[in-house]
Length: 145
Picture 1 (cartoon, rainbow, N blue to C red):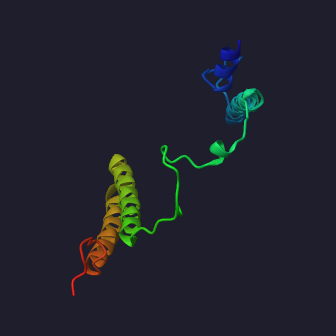
Picture 2 (cartoon, one colour; picture 1 turned 180 degrees about the horizontal axis):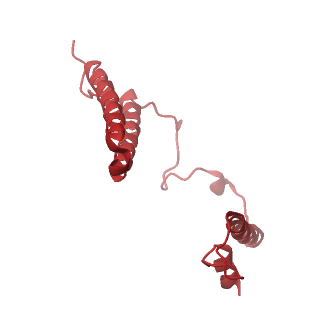
Picture 3 (spheres, rainbow, N blue to C red; picture 1 turned 135 degrees about the vertical axis):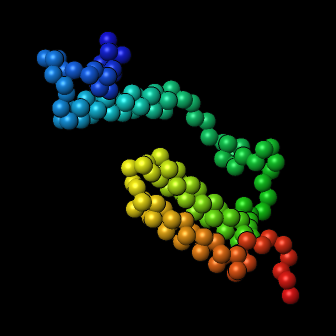
């Protein structure tokens, strides 16, 4: 019975009870019922885990886990800026790949105007890459004097 209710709440039916197609409001209501059921199950599981789980605090459990090694010193390490730059470059070019892929999927619908937009976007990123290259933001080796 629960699986039938979940399937109904998820909107797996293509026609309503009276034979007509469901409207946007009925689909939204079924999604709301489904979301409430998911939240109820999650709440029940969280409550049971907290209620049934044992807690025995102690000094060993309060220590940070470091693969069996007793931690010494500060956990704050200074990383070179290049690590952060590589992360930012990865995010930028990863987003570029998402935009170019979405353009490639719908390029027949976008026409020449879409081609102009994606060309401008790629050109802007290439100008940024050339700027970073000229400022030597991509060099990891020792500094030249």
